[in-house]
Amino acid sequence: MNRKLINWLGLTGLLALLSYAAAVVFSPLVYPDYNWMAQAVSDLSAQAAPSRTLWNQIAAPYNFCGVVCATCVCVFVSEKKVASKLFRVGIYLFTVMNWISSVGYAMFPLADGGKEIAAAQEVMHVVVTALVVAFSIASLVCLIVAGYREKTARGIGIWASVALLMMLVGSVGTGVMPPEYFGVAERFSVFAAVGFNAMLGWHLFRGFGKVQRKK
Image 1 (tube, rainbow, N blue to C red):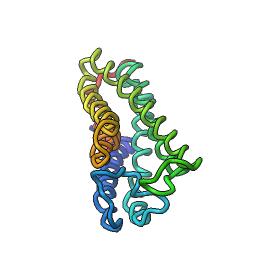
Image 2: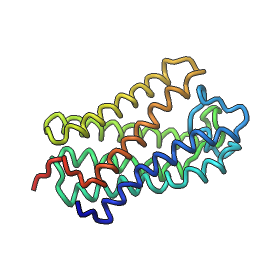
Image 3: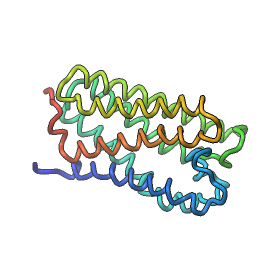
Image 4: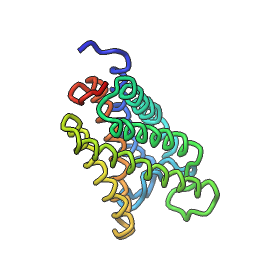
Protein backbone atom coordinates (compact mmCIF):
# COMPACT_ATOMS: atom_id res chain seq x y z
CA MET A 1 0.00 0.00 0.00
CA ASN A 2 1.04 3.61 -0.58
CA ARG A 3 1.33 4.81 3.00
CA LYS A 4 0.81 8.47 3.83
CA LEU A 5 2.21 10.35 6.80
CA ILE A 6 -0.86 9.64 8.91
CA ASN A 7 -0.32 5.90 8.41
CA TRP A 8 3.29 6.12 9.53
CA LEU A 9 2.20 8.03 12.61
CA GLY A 10 0.33 4.90 13.66
CA LEU A 11 3.71 3.53 14.77
CA THR A 12 3.71 6.11 17.56
CA GLY A 13 1.28 3.80 19.36
CA LEU A 14 3.90 1.05 19.46
CA LEU A 15 6.52 3.55 20.62
CA ALA A 16 4.17 4.68 23.40
CA LEU A 17 3.72 1.09 24.58
CA LEU A 18 7.48 0.43 24.62
CA SER A 19 8.14 3.70 26.46
CA TYR A 20 5.48 3.01 29.07
CA ALA A 21 6.64 -0.55 29.66
CA ALA A 22 10.25 0.63 30.03
CA ALA A 23 9.20 3.29 32.54
CA VAL A 24 7.29 0.71 34.59
CA VAL A 25 10.25 -1.68 34.58
CA PHE A 26 13.18 0.70 35.14
CA SER A 27 11.77 3.49 37.33
CA PRO A 28 11.58 1.27 40.44
CA LEU A 29 15.36 0.91 40.26
CA VAL A 30 15.71 4.38 41.78
CA TYR A 31 12.76 4.04 44.18
CA PRO A 32 14.02 2.32 47.34
CA ASP A 33 11.51 -0.06 48.90
CA TYR A 34 9.05 0.27 46.01
CA ASN A 35 6.92 -2.87 45.93
CA TRP A 36 5.47 -3.33 42.45
CA MET A 37 3.12 -6.07 43.67
CA ALA A 38 1.51 -3.79 46.24
CA GLN A 39 1.88 -0.28 44.83
CA ALA A 40 0.23 1.44 41.87
CA VAL A 41 2.16 2.47 38.77
CA SER A 42 1.18 6.10 39.43
CA ASP A 43 3.25 6.01 42.66
CA LEU A 44 6.35 6.03 40.46
CA SER A 45 5.47 9.44 39.01
CA ALA A 46 4.15 11.03 42.21
CA GLN A 47 5.60 14.45 42.99
CA ALA A 48 7.48 13.18 46.06
CA ALA A 49 8.63 9.91 44.45
CA PRO A 50 12.42 9.54 44.05
CA SER A 51 11.73 7.92 40.68
CA ARG A 52 9.76 10.89 39.28
CA THR A 53 12.65 12.33 37.27
CA LEU A 54 13.59 9.00 35.71
CA TRP A 55 9.92 8.22 35.04
CA ASN A 56 9.44 11.52 33.21
CA GLN A 57 12.52 10.88 31.10
CA ILE A 58 11.64 7.34 30.08
CA ALA A 59 7.90 7.95 29.72
CA ALA A 60 8.28 11.16 27.70
CA PRO A 61 7.62 9.34 24.38
CA TYR A 62 4.58 7.65 25.93
CA ASN A 63 3.09 10.95 27.11
CA PHE A 64 3.33 12.41 23.62
CA CYS A 65 3.00 9.44 21.29
CA GLY A 66 -0.08 7.91 22.93
CA VAL A 67 -2.18 11.02 22.22
CA VAL A 68 -0.71 11.43 18.73
CA CYS A 69 -1.56 7.84 17.83
CA ALA A 70 -5.14 7.94 19.14
CA THR A 71 -5.79 11.31 17.48
CA CYS A 72 -4.45 10.13 14.11
CA VAL A 73 -6.58 6.99 14.31
CA CYS A 74 -9.59 9.18 15.09
CA VAL A 75 -8.93 11.49 12.13
CA PHE A 76 -8.32 8.58 9.74
CA VAL A 77 -11.46 6.58 10.56
CA SER A 78 -13.53 9.77 10.44
CA GLU A 79 -12.26 10.93 7.05
CA LYS A 80 -12.31 7.46 5.48
CA LYS A 81 -15.65 6.50 7.08
CA VAL A 82 -14.11 3.26 8.34
CA ALA A 83 -16.71 0.63 9.26
CA SER A 84 -19.96 1.67 10.94
CA LYS A 85 -20.90 4.80 12.84
CA LEU A 86 -20.88 2.83 16.10
CA PHE A 87 -17.33 1.70 15.37
CA ARG A 88 -16.21 5.28 14.77
CA VAL A 89 -17.96 6.48 17.93
CA GLY A 90 -15.96 3.90 19.87
CA ILE A 91 -12.75 5.30 18.37
CA TYR A 92 -13.80 8.87 19.20
CA LEU A 93 -14.49 7.96 22.83
CA PHE A 94 -11.17 6.16 23.09
CA THR A 95 -9.39 9.26 21.75
CA VAL A 96 -11.16 11.50 24.29
CA MET A 97 -10.03 9.09 27.01
CA ASN A 98 -6.41 9.44 25.90
CA TRP A 99 -6.62 13.23 26.01
CA ILE A 100 -8.21 13.18 29.47
CA SER A 101 -5.49 10.83 30.68
CA SER A 102 -2.62 12.84 29.20
CA VAL A 103 -3.82 16.28 30.28
CA GLY A 104 -5.52 15.25 33.52
CA TYR A 105 -2.64 13.31 35.05
CA ALA A 106 -0.18 16.05 34.06
CA MET A 107 -2.34 18.66 35.81
CA PHE A 108 -3.13 16.58 38.88
CA PRO A 109 -0.28 14.16 39.71
CA LEU A 110 -0.27 12.41 43.06
CA ALA A 111 1.56 14.39 45.72
CA ASP A 112 3.00 11.28 47.34
CA GLY A 113 2.47 7.69 46.25
CA GLY A 114 0.90 5.17 48.57
CA LYS A 115 -0.59 7.80 50.90
CA GLU A 116 -4.18 8.56 51.86
CA ILE A 117 -6.11 10.64 49.31
CA ALA A 118 -6.89 13.90 51.09
CA ALA A 119 -5.69 17.02 49.26
CA ALA A 120 -7.71 18.62 46.45
CA GLN A 121 -5.05 17.73 43.88
CA GLU A 122 -5.15 14.06 44.90
CA VAL A 123 -8.96 14.06 44.77
CA MET A 124 -8.79 15.46 41.23
CA HIS A 125 -6.32 12.70 40.37
CA VAL A 126 -8.98 10.18 41.40
CA VAL A 127 -11.63 12.07 39.38
CA VAL A 128 -9.40 11.91 36.30
CA THR A 129 -8.97 8.18 36.87
CA ALA A 130 -12.74 7.72 37.09
CA LEU A 131 -13.24 9.59 33.81
CA VAL A 132 -10.51 7.56 32.12
CA VAL A 133 -12.13 4.32 33.24
CA ALA A 134 -15.63 5.47 32.18
CA PHE A 135 -14.55 6.57 28.70
CA SER A 136 -12.40 3.44 28.28
CA ILE A 137 -15.28 1.11 29.07
CA ALA A 138 -17.74 3.06 26.91
CA SER A 139 -15.38 3.06 23.93
CA LEU A 140 -14.52 -0.63 24.21
CA VAL A 141 -18.17 -1.64 24.53
CA CYS A 142 -18.97 0.28 21.33
CA LEU A 143 -16.12 -1.43 19.49
CA ILE A 144 -17.11 -4.86 20.81
CA VAL A 145 -20.71 -4.42 19.64
CA ALA A 146 -19.53 -3.05 16.28
CA GLY A 147 -17.20 -6.01 15.89
CA TYR A 148 -20.02 -8.42 16.69
CA ARG A 149 -22.26 -6.82 14.05
CA GLU A 150 -19.64 -6.47 11.32
CA LYS A 151 -17.50 -9.39 10.29
CA THR A 152 -14.73 -7.20 8.89
CA ALA A 153 -14.40 -5.30 12.19
CA ARG A 154 -14.48 -8.45 14.30
CA GLY A 155 -10.73 -8.59 14.82
CA ILE A 156 -10.68 -5.20 16.51
CA GLY A 157 -13.80 -6.20 18.42
CA ILE A 158 -11.96 -9.22 19.80
CA TRP A 159 -9.01 -7.05 20.87
CA ALA A 160 -11.47 -4.68 22.50
CA SER A 161 -12.95 -7.63 24.41
CA VAL A 162 -9.50 -8.62 25.66
CA ALA A 163 -8.76 -5.04 26.73
CA LEU A 164 -12.10 -4.72 28.52
CA LEU A 165 -11.56 -8.03 30.30
CA MET A 166 -8.15 -6.85 31.46
CA MET A 167 -9.67 -3.62 32.77
CA LEU A 168 -12.38 -5.49 34.63
CA VAL A 169 -9.80 -7.85 36.13
CA GLY A 170 -7.82 -4.82 37.24
CA SER A 171 -10.82 -2.93 38.64
CA VAL A 172 -12.28 -5.90 40.47
CA GLY A 173 -8.89 -7.20 41.52
CA THR A 174 -7.84 -3.97 43.21
CA GLY A 175 -10.99 -4.15 45.30
CA VAL A 176 -11.04 -7.80 46.30
CA MET A 177 -7.38 -8.85 46.35
CA PRO A 178 -5.26 -8.40 49.51
CA PRO A 179 -3.46 -5.01 49.66
CA GLU A 180 -0.12 -6.69 49.06
CA TYR A 181 -1.31 -7.61 45.54
CA PHE A 182 -2.95 -4.28 44.63
CA GLY A 183 -0.19 -3.41 42.15
CA VAL A 184 -0.53 -6.72 40.32
CA ALA A 185 -4.24 -6.20 39.66
CA GLU A 186 -3.81 -2.52 38.81
CA ARG A 187 -1.32 -3.29 36.06
CA PHE A 188 -3.96 -5.24 34.14
CA SER A 189 -5.96 -2.02 33.78
CA VAL A 190 -3.14 0.34 32.85
CA PHE A 191 -1.59 -1.94 30.24
CA ALA A 192 -4.99 -2.70 28.70
CA ALA A 193 -5.46 0.85 27.42
CA VAL A 194 -1.83 1.37 26.33
CA GLY A 195 -1.76 -1.99 24.57
CA PHE A 196 -5.08 -1.40 22.81
CA ASN A 197 -3.85 1.99 21.59
CA ALA A 198 -0.76 0.32 20.14
CA MET A 199 -2.99 -2.19 18.35
CA LEU A 200 -5.06 0.60 16.81
CA GLY A 201 -1.84 2.31 15.76
CA TRP A 202 -0.73 -0.83 13.95
CA HIS A 203 -4.07 -0.97 12.13
CA LEU A 204 -3.62 2.68 11.17
CA PHE A 205 -0.15 1.87 9.83
CA ARG A 206 -1.79 -0.77 7.65
CA GLY A 207 -4.59 1.58 6.63
CA PHE A 208 -7.35 -0.43 8.34
CA GLY A 209 -7.22 -2.52 5.19
CA LYS A 210 -9.26 -5.44 6.51
CA VAL A 211 -11.90 -3.29 8.16
CA GLN A 212 -14.95 -2.58 6.03
CA ARG A 213 -15.39 1.00 4.94
CA LYS A 214 -18.82 2.39 4.37
CA LYS A 215 -19.24 5.39 2.11
